[in-house]
Image (tube, rainbow, N blue to C red; front, side, top):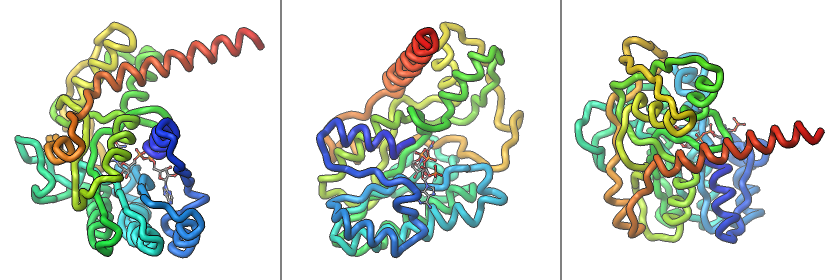
Length: 287
Ligand SMILES: NC(=O)c1ccc[n+]([C@@H]2O[C@H](COP(=O)([O-])OP(=O)(O)OC[C@H]3O[C@@H](n4cnc5c(N)ncnc54)[C@H](OP(=O)(O)O)[C@@H]3O)[C@@H](O)[C@H]2O)c1
């Protein structure tokens, strides 16, 4: 999802930015990564590869999660170092335990509650241990939605279209949805800066999953049959932070602009979905 958004944003900016698939650049394959880096000689490497099946990671996906999200980051660092490239590495709000009541700053203590969060924390540590020449920047973000991937907004739209109403959505987890095209633009704005260490980027305002679903329903169909439930009502294998709002002060100061609103991103995303549906039905009529 993020990889494709990065590809689109880089193309819109006229950047030469090959986006590599798993087949082209498996992050578990250190030698292959190095060969690709030496062939392309990038100025910046953005690692958007990850094992993102949060619930599966609690069981059968555990090893894969630690391999892809954790140790493989060392290979990405080595490839970037071999060609003197800067590294931007994408991480997650799930490194926090969710017990805070005010936005998490970059230096807040980390305490992941899920295997996925633990594996992403290992990846952060690998990225931050990079040689100084790599100028590593770990960009933590949260609650991604956008084209080209399964995500919460796409699921809500599908359930609404299938008539599975009322939607029942947890109201006791609060965070910030983030539109992947905005995140892609943020990453490309951060790339040329001197900033290293950790920075947080997400969209505004903080909302619960229930509030997010209600806004998706309102924008998509005008209806708002969305009932609040609690985390206990819908048990899932991986625990999620109850509160995971990231403080974006460091990002805003560095880039010199406020973060975008997820609601504007949602409008763009849903109008893209409507356009795709219209084009699909026109295509069917003409066949
Ligand atoms: N989604 C969220 O809500 C969220 C929230 C916070 C942070 N993040 C972080 O944001 C980043 C982007 O997430 P996303 O939502 O775009 O994830 P995504 O849609 O699942 O994309 C991850 C990509 O990584 C690829 N990949 C998996 N294993 C690989 C390997 N060994 N070598 C190379 N590529 C591999 C996957 O390829 P296949 O399709 O072949 O598996 C997939 O294309 C990740 O770092 C994630 O942890 C995501």
